[in-house]
Amino acid sequence: MATPRMVTAAGSTWPERYTFSPALRVGNLLFISGTTAVADDGTLVAPGDIVGQTRYIYQKFAKLLAAAGAGFEHVVETTEYVTTTENYRGTAEVRRALFRPPYPTATGVIVKGLLREGALIEISAVAVLPATTAGGSSRRQAGRRDRRARPASGRAR
Image 1 (cartoon, rainbow, N blue to C red):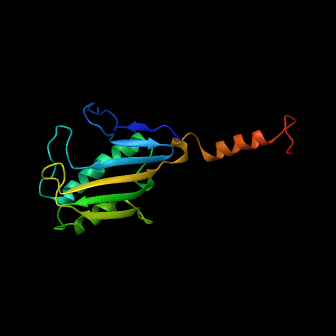
Image 2: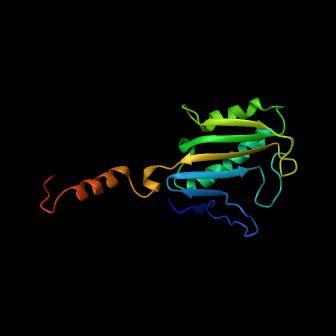
Image 3: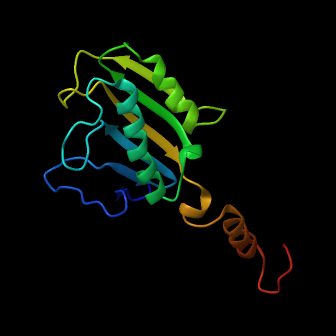
């Protein structure tokens, strides 16, 4: 099994008091933790606005994805926890602006509340990283396999 590696957005620090990673890379997978619309200074962004909070969360995801050498095209799954369905349809417009068909799989769960007071939505995601960020291109890896299969003379067995 590949060794997990924490991923943080470029230029950011992650407090040691937290017992979770913002994102964890394992092999060619990137697992992004449940994220709310909280700025670096701890303030809630877009209070009372689920669409604004969704937009901000995905801005945070963009930084994590970039730090791992990926983009939104590599996201294969999202999970959304929402405390309200008021204006929830507007979050689909945010997703359409970021994702292209085939869209990532998605699960939505209505919850009574979230840990961050005032947060209306929390989103987590999984991405499959491109081959070049997961230890080299698949073409280069195939070349290595081909060389191992040949005897020293260079001829195939």
